[in-house]
Amino acid sequence: MNLPNLLTLIRILCSPVFVGLVLYGHNAWALVVFLMAGLTDALDGMIARVLDQQTTLGRYLDPLADKLLLVTAFLVLSFEGAIPLWVTLVVVSRDVIISVGSLVIHLLRERVDITPTWMGKTTTVIQLVYIIAVLVETTAAVPPWSLWAVLAVMVAVTVASGLHYVFRGVKMLSVPDGRPA
Image 1 (cartoon, rainbow, N blue to C red):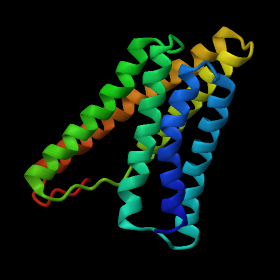
Image 2 (cartoon, one colour; image 1 turned 90 degrees about the horizontal axis):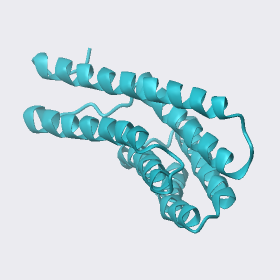
Image 3 (spheres, rainbow, N blue to C red; image 1 turned 90 degrees about the vertical axis):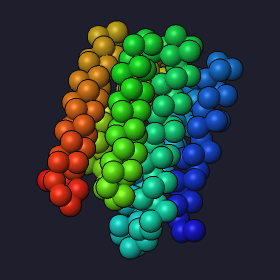
Image 4 (cartoon, rainbow, N blue to C red; image 1 turned 135 degrees about the horizontal axis):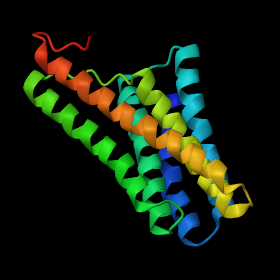
């Protein structure tokens, strides 16, 4: 256990706290917890690289923590009516397709490259920004067009990223050694 992995565990623990705050109508506090979780996401990777503390556990735990936080946020905010259900279906479907694809590649190749691509990292950041924008909108007056603009970019990048990972997976399965091109 090192500092980056501890920060990742804190992000995982933020998810149920975030859900409770949203469900009990404390959206301002939910925003604070979500921002804290986002900060741990930025810090854990930076600290791991700078202090050379990258671990195998961290390589698996970090994306898992990201997905847990984001999927949880999309689900609870959809349940509360702050995010349209179709948006949550797009986000969750992408993650399910990527997870199932990784499992299939693992079963067929035994080795799966789970390294996130720049497209995947960009998607995570834009999804975080969208959740923050939704939470800000539930606690303060913002122009409606601004939320729609963030939504449009987030959905476009999420879909493009999903397609990117599907094509990457197909390439892995089509080359003899299974390495992505």
